[in-house]
Amino acid sequence: MATPRPFLYVKSGCPWCDEAEEYLHEQGIAYGKADVLADSTAFEEMKRLSGQTKAPTMRWGTEILADFGAEELEVFLRERNVVK
Image 1: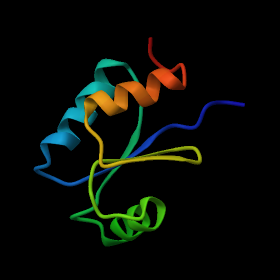
Image 2: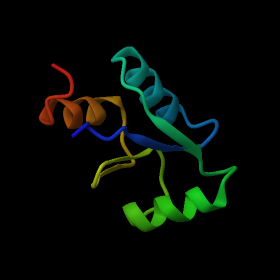
Image 3: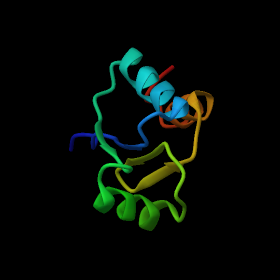
């Protein structure tokens, strides 16, 4: 079974969101994305999944990483053996 692709909820103009996207790009990790300021359905989904309204929030399979910076993202990915 293939590993599900991560999905990133971002807010335009958010420096942490830009940083998360840059990190995923540098690691060669393909991902889906929605700008929750432009897409109210995605915003509601992010709130339901994470219990909060802060971005970035990432859904990867059944796991949620909410309101994080690149350092937390790196730890999250290392713990799952996605990056070294």
